[in-house]
Length: 193
Ligand code: SF4
Ligand code: SF4
Image 1 (tube, protein in one colour):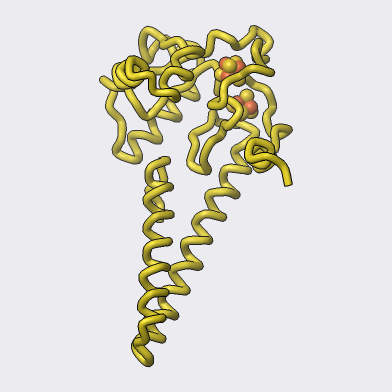
Image 2 (cartoon, protein in one colour; image 1 turned 135 degrees about the vertical axis):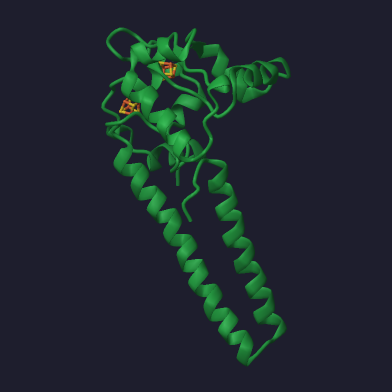
């Protein structure tokens, strides 16, 4: 049994990365640049780590000039989800990415890079080696919720025949499990349940 870090990385086979460098060259966050700077001023660890390596592009057009497909893909996905706000949109590029697409601080790269893609709903550049892995992980998460919903139906059926305290507790527990899973993944961008 390895460490949490080893297990986390083992779940994201690093050999899937084709080292195109696109996720380092043009990225964005769910928070605006202003929000990130405010969090940085409060010493928020995630914001500090992010702004230590990423430099904002002066405009969306400037980011588009670097990777049009990636920028348009992100914007279109946000529009589809009804979450696009141009005034809050900033793209960033990492100052440690080398011309040959390799990371110049690979061994010391921050946790946010080591843990990428962080959730099954992470948006990666088109053609990223992790696309298939992300699809699989999203399906696994959805299957778990579907199975829990089936269990819930069975329990509710049992309740109609035999409404014991034990059954009521189980129903409440399964409902809680379903809702917390849905809420967690909604936080990461899943609106598809
Ligand atoms: S976009 Fe995907 S394949 Fe390209 S460097 Fe990033 S993780 Fe690797
Ligand atoms: S630190 Fe390295 S891995 Fe992280 S974004 Fe920059 S170039 Fe990519």
